[in-house]
Image (cartoon, rainbow, N blue to C red; front, top):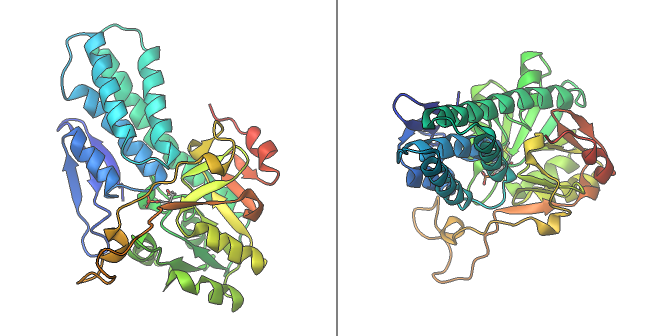
Length: 347
Ligand code: MRU
């Protein structure tokens, strides 16, 4: 299932509305920049790679929609669309990575015709989507080499097919293993407060016939202690140059528990998620989200006292020392990450 695609003929971005899953599988036709911004902000399209792909198509459409009779006018449309989309979510670096790639492509084009420049932007966005699919497949192969048939795997949030162009990152080895008869048993953390694990990962994996068990976030420790988990696999939103990694809130706690129980903790990261300009995790901007996601969402009535102070950081940073390996499409990076990540070709 393609969660993000371009319908160029109809001038629209088509996205799977991830907020309606698992009860309804509905696609939205987005025909305005504000709609795309809101779809990203409200997590209708979510997951770092999928956000990057949506932004690439979005900046192309946002350049095309207003129309332009000169290259200068087109460049202005582009800049306005880029700045606006860049303000939708702060943590996933793929958003900025994709927008910067689109900008470089526009700047490198000969300023011939407006049509020529638009085609270049569309081609670049398609390439970003295509590359993501290939990166995910390779991550899956590298990660699978670290796993044993029949293993119990724990994952947090959703780093699956719908969070990417195809296959997912942390779930890519699960899908490949499923095709090859590995018989993995996956434990999906529900992932409070937005329940990406319960709503999306449990749905995706069950649809694919994977042996899936849903647990509340506070049950990760007991399944580890009971020997049910052979490895933890998670995705990421930004990897700093020293290997500190931002991912969905709760990930760092899972990593601490995995270290306690001697369980390998793997981060699956396309190179589009590695931010060499960010020296350490302390410099990663952590998104704060609205209180109602904690106190009201999913409940028939508010479940916390009115006016209670809420803290709702959407991501946390897992320190590099807790990470066994970072699995990229170019290969597996081991500590010290300052050295192993520096060897990657980041374009
Ligand atoms: O807030 P979300 O749902 O966009 O957060 C997503 C995650 O934290 C994922 O683990 C990450 O983006 C990797 S998706 C391949």
